[in-house]
Amino acid sequence: MSINWFKFSSPATFYPLAGKLIPIFGVLTALIGIFGLYWGFFQTPDVLTDQKQYYRIIFIHVPAAWMSMWLYVIVVAWSLIGLIFNARLAYMIAAAVAPTGAIMTVLALFTGAVWGKTSWGTWWDWDPRMTSELILLFIYVGYMALRSAIEDNRRSDRASAVLALVGLVCIPVIFWSVNCPDPNQCAALHQSSSMSGIESNILFAMLTMTVSFWMYCFLVPLMRARNIILEREHDTAWVTEMLEVKK
Amino acid sequence: MSITEFFHMGGFGLFIWSSVGVTFALMAIEIIVVKKQHGTISKRLTRMLRMNKKVDQ
Amino acid sequence: MFNIFRCIVMRDLTLAMRRKTDVLTTMFFFIIVVSLFPLGVGTEKETLRHIAPGVVWVAALLASMLALERLFASDYSDGTLEQMLLTPQPLTVLVLGKVLAHWLLTGLPLVLIAPLVGLQYHLSIESTGVMMLALLIGTPVLSLIGAIGAALTLGLRGGGILLSLLILPLYIPILIYGSGAVAASAIPGSELQAYFSLLAAFLLMALIFSPLATAAGLRISVE
Image (cartoon, rainbow over all chains, first blue to last red):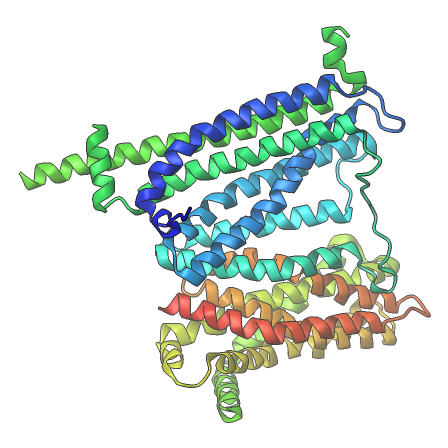
């Protein structure tokens, strides 16, 4: 089976396709989310050996943190596709994903702070992971600020794509430097996570919630991409036609 | 397990439920804002279309 | 190719020498920011010595940030930049020339007045030397990374504040190792070479990637 991918790269075909996908992702987000929360709150032990019930924050903390990083990769990937193939739609998707990524970063920071208060007794600690997440938020904000500051669509698309790429090159260096400010003793990671010791029910609930968050990260960017398309293509024939049919 | 016990969460209820609440509130707000945006844009475009038609006639 | 490079550097230096205020404002901005901290946090010797590395580097970051806005702005407004984009010479070389001139005018003065800061903050002579060397390697990286942001925000309203939003997070590694080197130099017997190797590695990386990204940014902005 061969799919004509270039057909979908036109906003005119993508718009109705996204419209059909949105309800599907909406239902998936809700159902998987409810199931994940049910499993997380009713099928898991109340007290672990060293962590009490507050560990349940991970069911939203970890998915949000994972999504915040993953969505930046998505933004860069679509920016790159946009630059290489000169595809308008790719830039629009990158623009649609970024705000959701920023929200995930905020959620990861907030839930992380709450967790910090319960387990370390402090809202904020300059722990490498928290610092990295904060810097990721700054980078998202910079990306969105540049995009909204440029009025010319073509320039704003391409300039923000270049910025996203520069960010991708810099982020590993930044995270690494935050991780070991003293290069002479770099081996010590302050907080190491072990997936192996985790109880299977907790892991299952966490992964289920991650899938739910992921579906959400399809849902909202698709909705936002439709808005961007509508705004930018408002003087094309297909938008005019569509609006007339609706009326 | 009673309902109060469930919401109490071994003394961590406030922390857990505020995290959960803020997360879902933010998500809901994002969806509502984007939806509203869609409404305003399509309304504006339809109005523009009608105006252009009147000009044409 | 080297001729064009030299030509651009000399041109920018001559232009700047006609209007010395630009150079002086950056330098005085740096001095003022550094002098404000003791007034804010108190003039106790130990505290000052403790915060000196961070203060100096944050002030250097901000000073080079402020100067960046003017990197391409005047060439853009009088149309020279457009001509430069049309020349057959590689744009990366032109960019590199402009960044070097910019660093000579705004980065190098910071290195040279660093001893003054050392006196203000009661740093030892070794620490002051380390600080100068770290600034010498680190400030060119700031100019190089900043050039990307300057190219992308060219001619935008409120470009200056936007520029800092884009670029300051990317300065973090330089801040960490630059001030780390100065802080480590206060502890006797500490190994400093790793800091300088890292800073030099950042410089090399920036030298390779930044002119490419800046050139791409300029083409996008001017088009």
